[in-house]
Image (cartoon, rainbow, N blue to C red):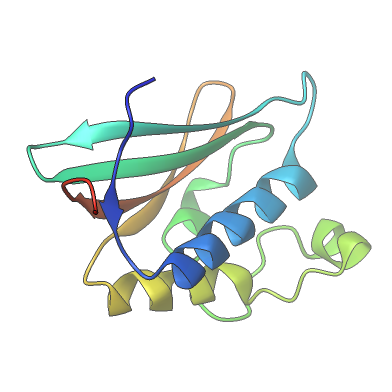
Length: 123
């Protein structure tokens, strides 16, 4: 794979990735697959994706998942101790980077993503 350099606060972006990964781990269902990948979005932007197999997020909940304390499946969230803050933290971090984040249902699960600017290799 080709090396990719992105612009962002490494600790904050790590927090975004960890929140997305924890979400994927807690909601993955058979065949229990989680993938992390990137896609170019134009010349200077990259989308970073965390996708898991599992039940789709109900359509009426999709636009709310980044709100503080919002939980799609309250019983499931209680079982693993989720607070409903993780995705709102992701949104705040991406807003502070002047970047986007989002979620979409796929045929086999759910795909969370965020954008970052590409950079030349640092010296």
